[in-house]
Image 1 (cartoon, rainbow, N blue to C red):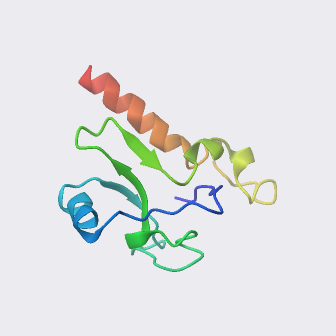
Image 2: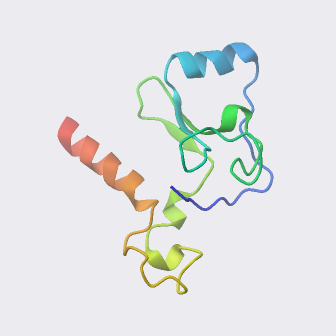
Length: 111
């Protein structure tokens, strides 16, 4: 999912290897930078900031606290896509909208 990145200075760097391993083992890595086949990407431009293990977002064990470096809120509509207006076939909804739709659906199911 192409999502705008608006941070020249930020990247994910865990305090130590124990924390990095815990994030992975407990399933707290929510998003990683990857290529179109889903392979994690260590280098620019697919990992635009050099984040360790290509980590783009993490959550707490409850899943309710979430932090993410890319900005899905900046790609909610076709007009936010860098290819607009050159590509008339773009969908009406931007790729970032799906993250928020999934969150709303999850909460409606849970509560």
